[in-house]
Length: 437
Image 1 (cartoon, helix red, strand yellow):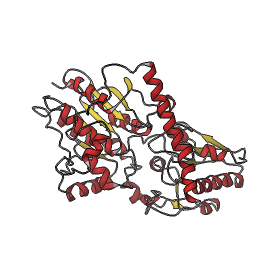
Image 2 (cartoon, rainbow, N blue to C red):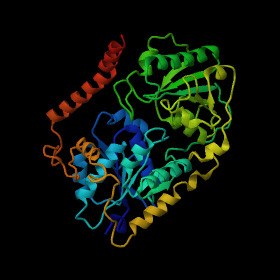
Image 3 (cartoon, rainbow, N blue to C red):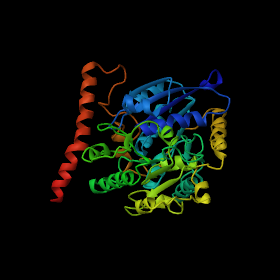
Image 4 (cartoon, rainbow, N blue to C red):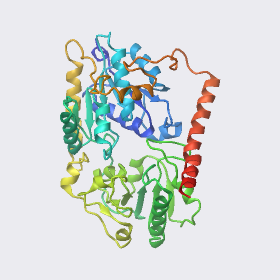
């Protein structure tokens, strides 16, 4: 029988970055059926973006246990442990690999957990690719009404079952509504690791932020950073703003800050970004929010998602005193729930999970859209990256999970990760610059 029949729900979250761990853990708490306590076990997928202890502390989400695993180690754990709910907080390829691996692991078991997946924030690129890689989970969470409609259209358009799509909202929304200007008036720029990508554009945005601070010495101007140099988040950051700022003469009212976004929003009077999910957090709290148009409104930047929001503006407009007024209809379609409906945003997911947990005879096998028959030239490569064969079975030589890594193995892992990050942040940009000569 499922664990929930005798005690609190047992929930596992597998995540591959700090932001996905935050999304996955918070989602797990939001979607658990009402009046049920949960025991939360966290698993961090080993890779380039595995969160550091500092990043985990900044996320601020507590788990009953938390450990780092490879894909194969995780699958072996799932074969031995009994969970009620499993949240896959991974990039699309990781989700697909785990779905096939789990299908293989659970093929001889009468019970399995409800498998849930989704997206950390705004879905503005690779819609079809990402969605089809997530197909096969019991619930594919859509963070807004707009996303739910798009998700169903993609699945139905390829003849895949769309019933797993379940509308919710971003799980990390919250905090006190904005009530008026602070003293001092505080402007926050929410930086993103990979948007924009090139040095010229990032230097431009930093310079405009610094100029705004000089024009308004009575204001506090904050550059909200996601990670410190050497740390990785969901996306690779080759040119950290910290390094660009070292070369500037910064005014006294300009500061670089880290920490929980919600705590920064507590003192924010104007949130400025290119396309960060922080914009949706701010809109939820009715904090004045600007999505910059200085670098154009382009799919590559992600700010095209905000067309119709009423939040698009340039630094010139902000310097001249412009204050955005969000379009209420647009906001209502984005899962922002600024109208007070956030308390019920996860009801449908909770109800669905409750029914699945009570399903007589347990749950059917996982059935991803991609199989060796439907995608023979695509699926094997995705599975192989996680040391899995075409049928989801671990390949020969895959890392063992029967013991904890020894001191030497741990040192080698840290060195390899450090070398990778050095290559991304130092060597790769140099090679690109040489290629542009």
